[in-house]
Length: 139
Image (cartoon, rainbow, N blue to C red; front, side, top):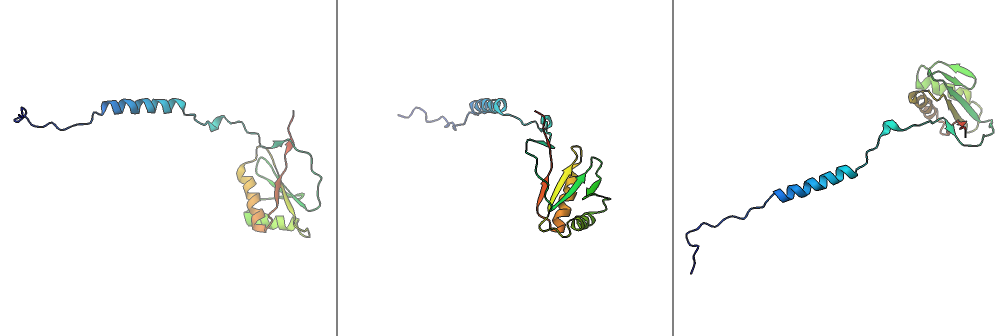
């Protein structure tokens, strides 16, 4: 005996409301527990370091970079007219030195571009040993 002979069979359907509720709870949990980095709040003071003073070596090429972007190679002021010219000045200052070290002394307010120009000029000149000077931080 089949009592449901005339009735059409209902299609099963998935109820999405509980799925949406669960997804909202997961989304809220992730939003609350996520930490966001705030790079603008970092206080960086790059030119200071706790290190012992190094003895000056005879095979150093000292390059000074001012806050205004002016350069001094050795003890000679150099007007920046391009990386190739700065590389020639570095080679001239390091003439006769065996495996010279480029020592960059940049002002704390000097732009990164000014320092990168010196590093690029050293690369063009074939000088691979580069170091930076810092001042001792106050304790």
